[in-house]
Image (cartoon, rainbow, N blue to C red):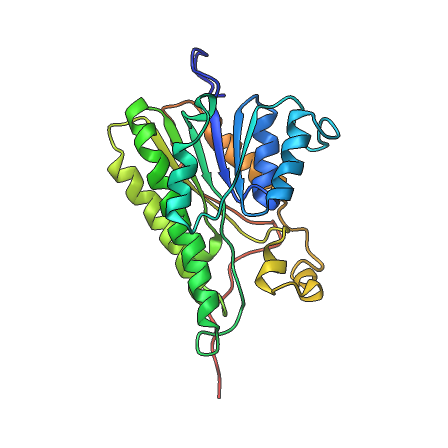
Length: 271
């Protein structure tokens, strides 16, 4: 999977939030490279369908880069549950136990209300998934990577980490945490060959807005109206590019936006 000499074992890639969107596209892309896949998400039926596709039990090769015949292990997992994460990692089958790439993809935004009217339950769910879930999975898998002196932690962040916008109060703060945690991991891992990358997408069309607007499909569709956003496949391509660079190369932070998206100017309220 890397561009260096190929005495390395078959890569094992652990993907959270793998049942749809970025996660499913990343799984298909890695499957096309022959990696062993651990697919983790809460929606077990979707995981099973994706596993059927990638292993060839279903409809065969996917249209967007997947490969039937892949080795897949699925885990019904809520990353917010630290004990469940630890148990899932401890119970990995031997052929999947040496994880070489962790893609912390599970996360998302809920609501777009200003802070003074936002639902605190939404805030807690975003913190628990985007921050705590990422921490749980990283802490469970990182020691093995360090012991083997080989691995890559890829965190899916957001342009919201550095660019504020109305209603992004806690979501943006969560992704700012992801950005800084990724950099701090790099500092902690100096001297090892374990890599860390924070990938920060801009406007991308997945279930993201449908979740943010709690199932309001019209409001979600309006987010992408009149513009060609990034796709899940675009993000998958960036993840695989970072993971397959020569092992001495570390992409610290990668920000992607559609061509028709840019940074907003300063907001000024005039009387």
